[in-house]
Amino acid sequence: MTDCIGNNLIHNASNKNSKTDKISNADSSRQEEFDKILERLAKAYPGAGPALKFNTPFELLVAVILSAQCTDKQVNRTTAGLFKKYNTPQQFAALSPEELAEEIKGCGLYRNKSKYIIEAARAIVERHNGRVPQSRAGLEALPGVGRKTAGVVAGVAFGASALPVDTHVHRVARRLNLSLAKDPSKVEEDLAAYVLPQERMAVHHRLIAHGRQTCAARRPACGCCCLKELCRYPAKEGEQ
Image (cartoon, rainbow, N blue to C red):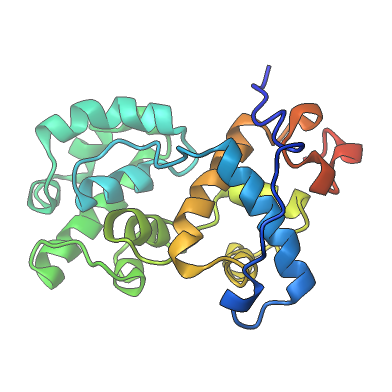
């Protein structure tokens, strides 16, 4: 059964002034709606942060690539041993796809992931002197690195302003009517318009936490959700 998070927060939410004057091009009534949701999420998940374990930006990049269609727990189990053997771009660049695939079998799609990780490592060594690019654009230029992966690495490792959209963020945003877009980049654009740049990664982590712990895909715990008064979804419990 999904744990209930923030069951009593609805009655404790304070009516603070909105951030309407701080974010340009944001509709004031829409901004107030966002602010109420974000305030409750902040209270429900104050410690939300990265679940992947890493020590360097490159380790984070590898872990995020491995996390595609795989749980963070399984990735952490895999990288616990992997990073003891190899943990630099140079070391990964020297591996063959077959060697790395054998190490990451538990993560699924391991042949493709092996290829992408090695190609990205080689690009980092050859184009960036062994240093992971800090910008989102620089990260997206690496082989096998898409917008979400680049956003997570840039935001977590380098403090960039980003609100990457994964399956949890996308689902929660849709159910809360924060964005009905299908394209993750458009969902990010819709969300970012109402979130201060310096708060976007924190909001990313809180939306993921809410999606995992309360707003699950198949059986959302609508009855004990801290956002139930603000959500259009409860009447459609069970929607995919």
